[in-house]
Length: 402
View 1 (cartoon, rainbow, N blue to C red):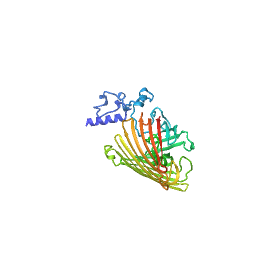
View 2 (view 1 turned 180 degrees about the vertical axis):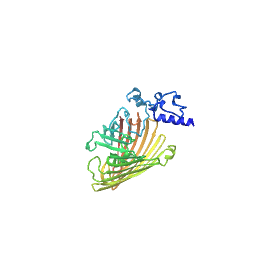
View 3 (view 1 turned 90 degrees about the vertical axis):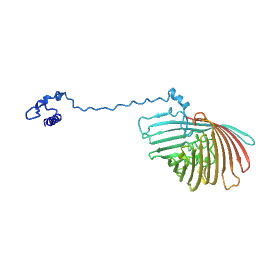
View 4 (view 1 turned 60 degrees about the vertical axis):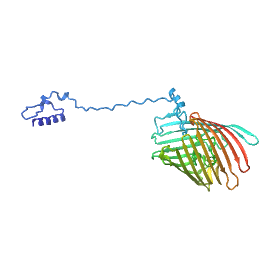
């Protein structure tokens, strides 16, 4: 019983630290007092002990301008499906405050030497095919990004209409999906929606350069799943900022991946299709497309088909009924050297008989530093079935993505 009383008194003592030890009696007979306690209240430290978490050592940020970083530009394993420049890290600026987290300067250059030879003469010339400068990066949330790209290439067309190539913002808050707002290049077939720095030859196929390769302004949803991906967009039917909302247009593309379960064991197969439909200045158009792409180890092939009842692509708005198809074979002899063949058939007006234009192309790509430094050699045999004439073209291209 005395022990219980002693514990209760000790508890009261801690709850009333200002009471002196001599004033407390633990029992009526004063048999046990706090004098038996060796430490006085003043000597007892009742303050709680706070354990501060250990600070993790911060990783030292390596400068992109060190000798090791610059040497990494040469030794890097470049992705042939990426347009990221060789000086991406060196041209990046981190922004410590504000809504924008970083900004990456991009400079893309593509020049060609070509010699067109017909039955009478030849025409050798140099052309600066592409000069693009822009900025891209992420916002502070890291789930949103932006891209600005400008075309500074000298051209006979209206310079200011073609000045803005890309001007969009995106959000990736929905898993496997990217929602885009602004001006971009819609997916009109595989090659028609590709960057000019990723296409296998110096020029696009005839269906791609007539129906695709165009910039439009609108809303776009891109999805990427294991067995399928898609690109669904609603746009103004204006192209290159030439008119203010002359109509509406839908560009829809779906791609299936039937061999995705094998994780590349049997190669990668993509089967896609889509439509482009809308109205511009009361002119209706409808484009139907289908494509097949297969890649296995060093070999890849691609086939595309398109049929138009009116179109609104890079060659302009037209009511003509046109169609075409092309087939490409390629083999990568090494990581740097690639050989290609393409057969390309296009009918610019189905109402005219024997009007097909055919192109037979052989090419060599030498990837010095992936797509960031690439040499291209193409030979093209052109056939016009209407007058049974032939012409030959030899083209040498140099590509640099900074």
